[in-house]
Length: 183
Image 1 (tube, one colour):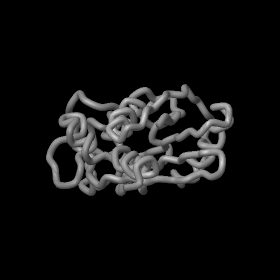
Image 2 (cartoon, helix red, strand yellow; image 1 turned 30 degrees about the vertical axis):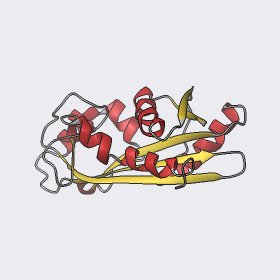
Image 3 (cartoon, one colour; image 1 turned 60 degrees about the vertical axis):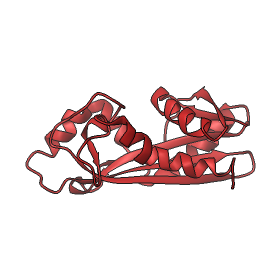
Image 4 (cartoon, helix red, strand yellow; image 1 turned 180 degrees about the vertical axis):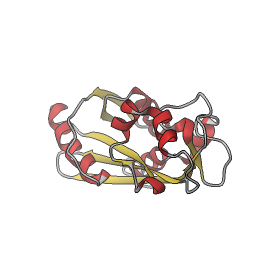
């Protein structure tokens, strides 16, 4: 089975290839840059992007993924604006906003939307954790150097195996994979 992944993020493609490939699904990258709607809801954003990606893919089945990090002390910021904030402020900016803050709880959330021409289905994943005091590690991308998953001491960037087995994206990809292997 082959499926198109519409994204401009090659790191996300690599994660999808690893997870879905283990289920016998071939992931083909469809370079896709799309102006997202403004919404506080990841699923709403992903569903709209999936509809646009389906058209861009020549009406072939396609999936998109939208994700964000929601930091409790910042009232859920950056949430659905995580990619934009990462480009503008980076991890250093988030850590600056968190200076002196003791409540460091955060959750990574992901939503995959799959458009097969008949319907759009959504698949969710999340990972609870906290924001570290400093960026640590060199693996991964984005917020990985400052996110420590619950029950662990290392950031995703310090231990890529943690990310590969616990991340929000991994969990949403596992849910998505069930449509290809329903057993």
